[in-house]
Length: 262
Ligand code: ATP
Ligand code: MG
Image (tube, rainbow, N blue to C red; front, side, top):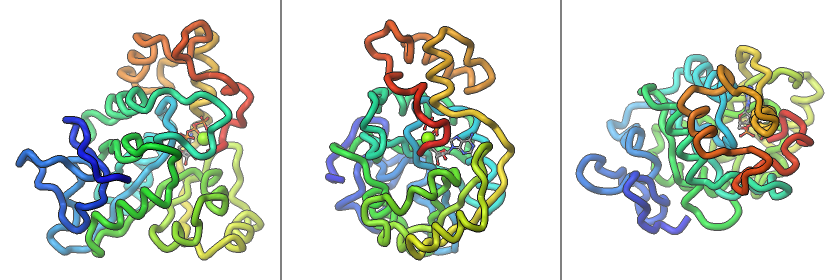
């Protein structure tokens, strides 16, 4: 997080702007994203959802998960934050951050409860969740409660995260059930043994969709219709993403990856 100014789409790193929500619309760049930068500025308690992920590409499973978390926890909105260089996906090429951002923006357009932040994509180097949570915590006043939304599979990997104790301190977690992944008592005990994480579990409509599965289908020339919103599918098609023959394809190892790995 450098605090450097970013492009005209209005998001930049949070350092240096702590406690000073950007006055969106007054020509100042946003810190997290224009739509939700001012959340909590009236001092009233409010909950904000954060959905992190590689989103390579974003799909209906992500969107349904965010929507149902919003309902379940009474969130004022959900900010999708695509990772920059993910710490756990160094084994395969990940599609350029700007393109993943473009797909996320296309996916949430028209939903006033959703927004996309370029905070992680704008940060150089490997992405760690703890840096993002710190930046968010620095930006929002204490009356804003942050809910980090993730599939239950991703929650279990928290213990592997850089500075996991700090991660536990900075946010609450909303863990969604995912098909093929059971949230059992032993699972909860294992998580508890890894740190003092505050996790709420919630049921999400079972959508056995993953980005790996979409990449695999695209690589085989199969349709992505109804698996991801049409504007996202159109970007994938127009740019020839994930096609084996295209140089920009980001599918190396994609088919081998377990469908629910974070
Ligand atoms: P990949 O197959 O490349 O790992 P993915 O579909 O798991 O992709 P990610 O970007 O890794 O997508 O995941 C972002 C977050 O969304 C994670 O917390 C993950 O658990 C959650 N998630 C992804 N797909 C679903 C789904 N179908 N239902 C519920 N949660 C999901
Ligand atoms: Mg995953």
